[in-house]
Image (cartoon, rainbow, N blue to C red):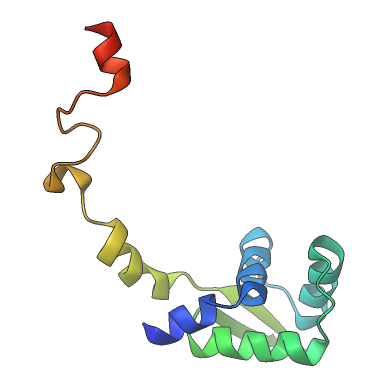
Length: 111
């Protein structure tokens, strides 16, 4: 899980994941072009490639080769344990959820 946090700590890598979420299956050239035009990131192809290597090591990006092209795909699998650990727990079980019976301003005003 530590590699996932390290990979997500960098804003450029988060932007790369945003781009793959928006349009999955891009080559390095396509990613560089979109990062430059849409996000004004002026990183070199080598720098983006290194970011992709970190994301791939954390298993957040998977690759597939077709001929001389290498396509990059987002993999959300490594995020599932994080979601389960912190976001998967029900607020109702803790007694602080919106349906826990505590009065809100909206329900107080209508009572």
